Image (cartoon, rainbow, N blue to C red):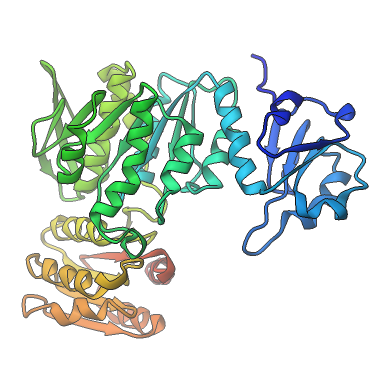
Length: 462
């Protein structure tokens, strides 16, 4: 199979691009913004970031015999004596997106765009695992899902790939529209509309306004939107769309699911009705939220022609995503490592899972602050406390500026509750606790680095 190539003509057509030494230009087959990752026939794009400026590495990549470089116009004097082909543009970060858009048009793959307030990375991994049974799949690496990550995901795709699963994140208005115009999805999914990033997106309606750009752009291109009918805002928005597939547990949908039981390890047995057919299986990953993530993936897999047998085979490839509802067993102690990130919806889902696991075990929740909630931070942390009051937990420990509001809202149903100002003190209290026949949940926003608590606890239990 021939490689995808960027030709001289592709660069002539880039907005505001000027090409120097074009007579030495050879077709480009790879693009990098990392000076350590330079391959054959490679274009190096000098991106100015928060910590590093790619322009400082131009000499290094030239020595590595990079084929061409792209720089900002304001750096021309600094590099005017370059003997290799180089392209100047007004903004290399924007041009990275322009080049990725050209690359996308050269791909024969179907692109699946995914966003949402919670579960998008896990859903992306489930979709990729299942579809890989039938197709050659390329996916977003980790959660590299911003204005730089999405273009790089596309540029790392090869001609052999048949499916691209592209995660698209946001925390400011306009970001989803920007990345969607680059990724040009054929299928699009929003997992849910919650309270993530409302410091910048204001409220759930703001979150919908931002994230729904993915669905609008997909349908405008003749693609299909996948609608979570259990999300009130998405269900209402979906009524406007002509090309859509619906899925849900609580509201009538094209793919209608039911959780039959959740076992002692937190794993769900799920049944899905679609048309006149019925699919049933036990999921390999825990939590009701992962049942919802799987349902979305199932709907997409079916629409792309996978059989039930292929989906069941793909299920065996699904694993917990790092620091996202990872369940670790240490003799008779279980830790739910959900330390990657947190928002009100994912926090409630994880607490609900904790409450249902191992009924005879003691339950401890270790919770850190939820970030980017703006003026609603206090209110939404208090809501978590009220939610816990409806569960049956034995101990709640909190850490951070806002999570003290969780502790202050707890009632007498929670026997042990304490707020910590320092992580080391929380860790010491955990280590002193009697953890035999205990399930511990560790969760908080990325900036809280709650994985440090998990690592310390893991070490003590070995």
